Length: 229
Image 1 (cartoon, rainbow, N blue to C red):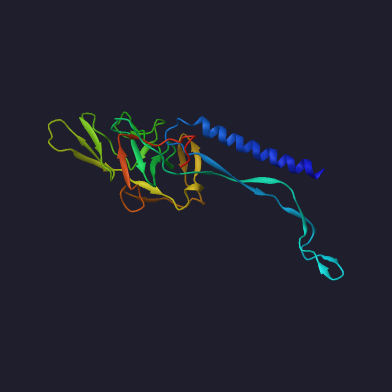
Image 2 (tube, helix red, strand yellow; image 1 turned 90 degrees about the horizontal axis):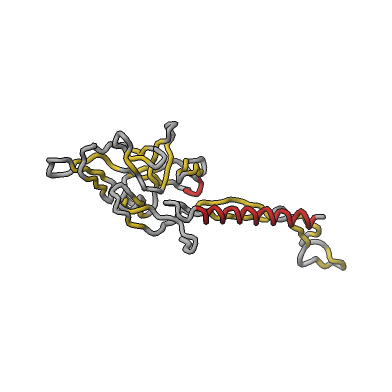
């Protein structure tokens, strides 16, 4: 009953494909969500007759007989491609134009990475995600700050009462990976490095290959079902 087992592998692969599509659709409004793509491979083959088998009277068969045993899921890869931007008028909303990830500090002290730039201020004035993960390298915005500006090269400045010029608070740095598809998803728009992704290469936005810029007051791109990037 080889046919039943072969067909079962196809149904299992199609079920995974549907599950992945459902997850992509469910996150259509998730900030900076990146869709996943399935990659499939055929399974091993049983050789019934080789291509060089004798066909009789000294002749060789031009083709052989190989029976496949179905399909398997080889990978489900995140597609880190550029999307569109939505202006929010929020001075702490950032979007990466080009390659790179924001660096975060998890509650356990681990460094995590995200493309979502919808940051908020915590009680200490530090920039954090909606789950409270701190932006790295960290800096604090004074409570008396009148306004906060973030330049395209990641420099964060705040204007304080009575001061003519804004004071520089710090610089946002971006991380890049040789193989971003190898990053492990942690949920909540956050990823961690792995052996296959390689170690993070860190630099300020605007350098060749980083960014090229960090855009303030813009919401990070979301994944849209009807537009493949």
